[in-house]
Amino acid sequence: MALFKTTYTSLEDEKLVSLIGKKDTQAFEVLYARYAKLMYNYFHRMLWKDKEKARDFTQDLFSKLIQKTDSIDESRSFKTWFYSVAHNMCKNEYAKMEVRRTAHKDISFHSDHSVSDNQKMDREQFQLKLQEALNDLDETKRTTFELRFRQEMSIQEISDVMKCSEGTVKSRLFYTLKQLNEKLKVFEGITVWIFTVMFF
Image (cartoon, rainbow, N blue to C red; front, side):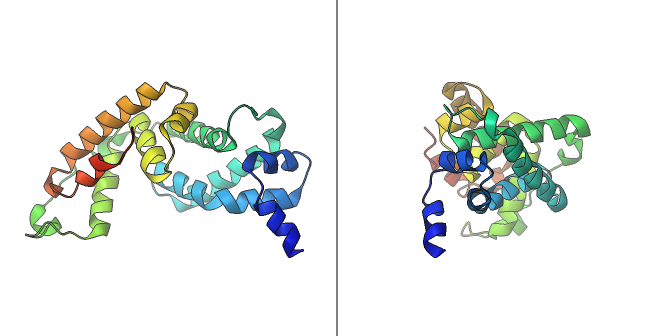
């Protein structure tokens, strides 16, 4: 039995999806274990850190996988297809909820509390301020940042997920990081990490 499980875990995503289409529950369990946490974290960050909503969307996403295995484009990687579906789910939720970001407009940073003399700061506080700044961005820029820096997807993968050119992805990243740098000026010397990430 252990050998059987090991064989499944060594399979590529696309092969597992093919087996899922044949009602193979073992293949589904392996793919679920591979992506469930990633997708929960993605939805959690994209849907206002609502844990219940993130759980529901994760389950809905896997339900869509089961329902649509026959219609998955085999010319694309499963990963980009899966994130495309998740991305569209978030866009639909934004439209349904008519999201207005005015509540996040008044973001204040206090250097005397956030950054010490030697430019050290509490990591949790920085992450909180970064998330607030991200929430203040439009959905397209926020999603691009999420896919690149938190989901660690390549430029090519992001262009596939968001259905735009690689040049457009790079442009969005450039302007997103520029805006974040402006909003996080109080952390000067610390936000350098954002610009040193190799996204080209």
